[in-house]
Length: 257
Image 1 (cartoon, rainbow, N blue to C red):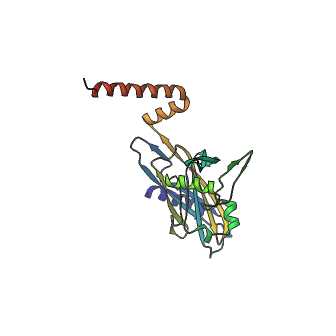
Image 2: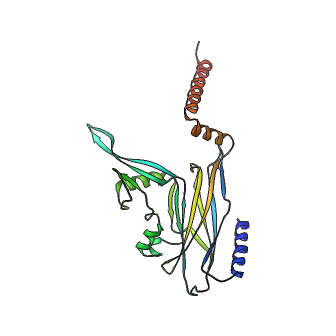
Image 3: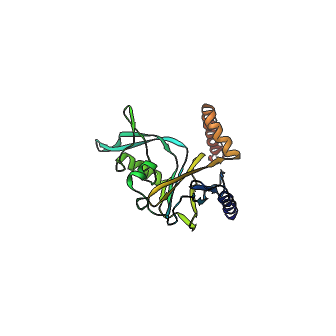
């Protein structure tokens, strides 16, 4: 954890030695790539940040930070259960389009205390402020936070550990140096994660910075995942034949004469 922070401070000093300009954000991850193996149970990636104020920045500024880490987009269908003829069955449904497969919103205090609601909504700064598009007939739209389909979608994702909000996760190590741990569960989707940092000062949006994190499978897991994606029919046939073979061998081993 020390090396990324040391590199970050050196870069911040170099920026400070250069021409004065607008406020800058210098970001660094403890590791930019996470590899998933069969024994992967989760990980925690630390994001370090340094704020380099511009020449016209006020001296009495109070900084706030909101971090959003978003995994690869996916579609997700949420169903409403209905009771018919004494049985619970799937009724109406909504499809969430291009929703992040992983979403972590981290801040140093509750977003409601950082800026006005319209600013938070515009910047998607906060868990409830993130837009989740639904397919409504032939249209696509975001809905109010209390929408039952949205709430059901969020409950599923939060139960899986793929969606989370922590309002005390950003720690200021110094007035202009901060860090935050981004937790990845064991079922973290593979792909590129976009990590966006939004800097607020006295209630106003001041600066936006971004970096990326790659989550990838390796070795046998990667080969299986690639085969399942690129050769779905062949993968299905091989899987079915493998299951039949295991069943046949089990029958030979455990059968009673």
